Length: 216
Ligand code: DX5
Ligand code: ZN
Image 1 (tube, rainbow, N blue to C red):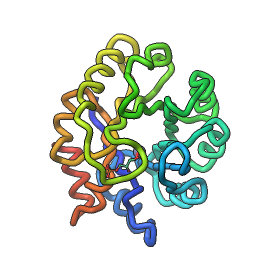
Image 2 (tube, rainbow, N blue to C red):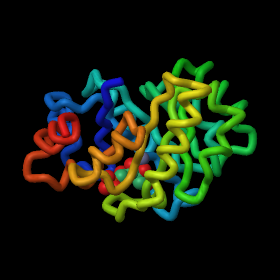
Image 3 (cartoon, rainbow, N blue to C red):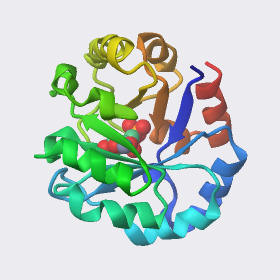
Image 4 (tube, rainbow, N blue to C red):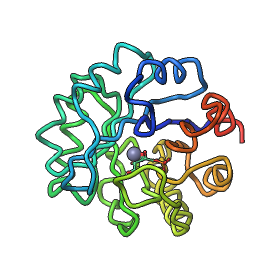
């Protein structure tokens, strides 16, 4: 499977978001990664519906919504209406994960589950066949620009193994501290969707940084 690049606009210039979206449109980015933080599940607040609604008409690229919020069930329909293609919820934020995943699909989106660095991959054994995507967090969620956690490789191997047996089409996304220095190793370990925020938007030429992630 060809790998996908999902630049995170958490690190974009919010004073001129349109310019950054247009750069992404011209780039080899496959998806736009959209990080929603509520200040409760994670110690930071980012953005929500109004920004998603503003971004949606500016791009034809699928928008990959990563919900770092408690009680995501209450907001799934609204995120779907606002333009999400994929919605990923956190395992740690869902009491009835099966119900939440069905709700995402009923809203017309593909469904993902994110795992914090301390959450074992085998906790997904009984839901994996229902998922389109699993997001392995390679930093503690909440902020861009953090240092990559090395134990992520072990989790990617575990997930690859689980998906090989149970859901070979699963998208394996990794998020946090990704740059052209570790992208090759991550792909080799089993990732097939790479999220990158600061390494793209802090680059002198962001489209070139995306190109390098796409062609490591
Ligand atoms: C972190 C977010 C990430 C973040 C990644 O909580 O989920 O998507 O934007 O940023 P970098 O690539 O800078 O680590
Ligand atoms: Zn994210």
